Length: 97
Image 1 (tube, rainbow, N blue to C red):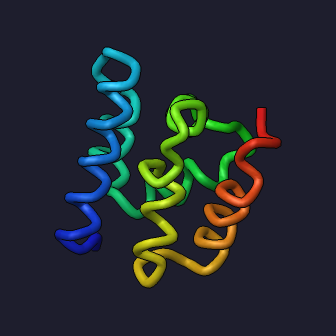
Image 2 (cartoon, rainbow, N blue to C red):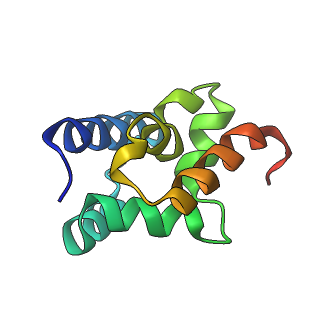
């Protein structure tokens, strides 16, 4: 179960993304509702596909507001391989398409 602090941070990140794109993030919110915060974020950062939210926030020079950054900040709530995947994306953000 995700901590209240993690939940608040994920919600803040989704709102930042929604403001950036000017739309409601239906699929992201549905995935979080269906899978829970930890499982949803874990699946997203381990996916071979780079999510639109990451690209949008990276291109706005706001990597600190990505799910990857949230995972690193709350690393104690995620499996080590998830934290490593998130950190790798952050470290290589500019090379990722």
